[in-house]
Figure 1: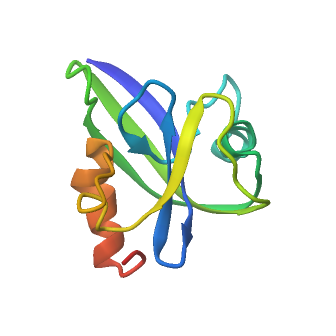
Figure 2: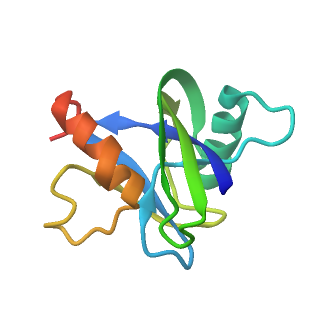
Length: 133
């Protein structure tokens, strides 16, 4: 089985989670991406947040690693290291990002498609921890 390793930034504001949708993709995911060779998780987060949203990473703290089958390719495992993060600046969708939204646990009612790893694991945990509404 192939492994798709990703570093994700969990950014919460007003009990909502910042999520992005890449161009040509239907689902919202955490901002972040794959670390480049020799890059630390914090360096990868800083680079990805700058590239995707034009913001500067201020702090990050490791939360947890999640694993789930990739929504397109069931022979690929997504391994996502999630870091709670804070940033400076006003986010704007750029690079491969089509749009971003602040999402709470009512995303289904609001007709927002969210990747399965977030649906099955991360968002329920944030709700249980009372970090999102």
